Length: 156
Image 1: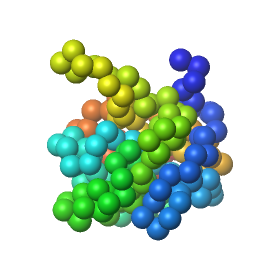
Image 2: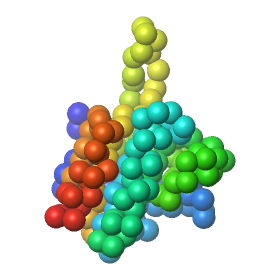
Image 3: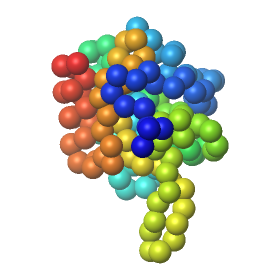
């Protein structure tokens, strides 16, 4: 699909809500950014993914790499999720319509038990210092994912 930015493309600069106010991908220019999108706070896979990134956040920080977790959940839900699981990775709330996930082509139609609905495709982007996509992990399997991203980001 041509509406899915890929490696080498500039990441769309779409504003999201962060705990300290609006946050944009361009806020991280000058350093690498791991932008990981997950479907929903406090679900098993999303909890594991966020805990794994939180556990490795000191290594990402030491390598000069910023982390940002994104879902469409509201900030209040993010705050409860982070507190409940001692998450250290900053979380942002993407807009319901025309958000960054839409611009990246990962807010997509899903099908479960014969029911069709819109949902987040678990995807991670490594953004370089100039704001270009350096690597994409699509339809992420959570096990060992954060460690694989750390290794790739350190080598990029």
